Length: 170
Image 1 (cartoon, rainbow, N blue to C red):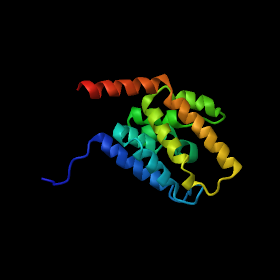
Image 2 (image 1 turned 180 degrees about the vertical axis):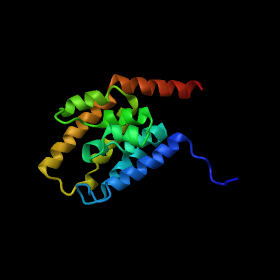
Image 3 (image 1 turned 45 degrees about the vertical axis):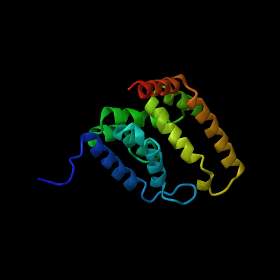
């Protein structure tokens, strides 16, 4: 009998997602020269209260945009759950898609909102920027507007109300 706990499927998916993300972003730095995978891990930790599936999607939120990976590669070759693949798809800004349209798409799913809010919080940390140029400032303004829009969305408000009611009456 093994003394190690048996991992459930979602925990295995999270472990696999971490491995894939760190391998694919191994030699890619962020804007400040830090390993890009650390950003993905920070976003994942920002949604740790939402469970392993959401954490797996969060750590892979930039894979499709920033690497050669595809959604079918995640679902077919690595057998991630349909929910993980769905969240990664929602989190992927499509080629040619306006940023506002992308944010509107994210607003349709509470877990995607949580991932994007975590992503925006981490991306807005000025300690991660190499400088405070005009371009960086404009990006921060864009992120602040997206954060406010997501946080104010009806989908998110309903999730908060539901969570609050469950906490009050359980």
